[in-house]
Structures are given as C-alpha cells and as structure tokens.
Length: 124
Image (cartoon, rainbow, N blue to C red; front, top):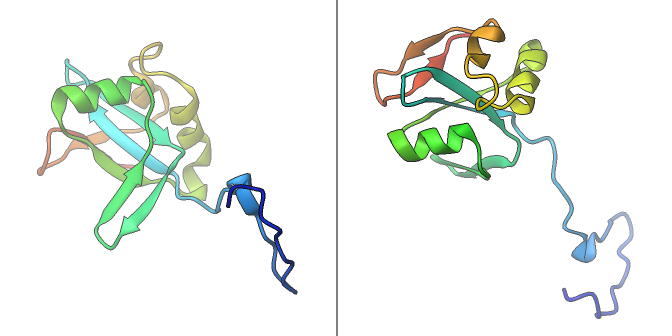
C-alpha cells in the first residue's frame, strides 16, 4: 500500500497499513565468534528470526562480531532465555571493541565448536 488507498475497516481486525509493524515476540539470537586472537565474542542480534525450516536470518550493522564473521567466516547461534536475560542484555549493550573479554565478564564460558571455528556458549 502506498498510503493513498481508501482502506476499509474489517470487524475484529486491525489494518497496520504502511506503518511497518514489528511482530513479536522475536527470539533473542545470540551470535558467538572468535576474534583474530581466538578470544570469544558474543552479541545479541535483535533483528532476526526463522525464514525457512533450516534457515535463520539476522540483521547486523558494524560490530566486532560482524568483523569476526567476515574474518573467520564462522559463527554459532544460541537462543537466550528468561533465565539468562541480564547476561544476554549485557551482550547486546556492551561492545566487544570496548570490552574485549565481555564473555568472561558476564560469567559465561565457551567450548570450541566441533563444526566451525567459533565458540559454543555453554550457558545457552
């Protein structure tokens, strides 16, 4: 819709029009990478979700994690839960460029993935 159409109301329904509504809940997608020194980094990708039975999508801007993905061509994905909300929020708020040991500071540990050159976050 380009906003110029005459939108007819439908009983019991809400027309969002061109507002571009956000559908929730969205999963808290936690992306883990290693940097150039194999130091683990984790970030929360706020804009993501499932786009097929075996595919996910997420939107990333300029972040340390993005640089790590481009450098290593590898990452792992975990999903945050209500039980680890504070730590997960920390990963979304704190930059790995400013706090390079943020995984350790959050009290989390990692195990190397046997499939890709990226960490698996043990607490997820």
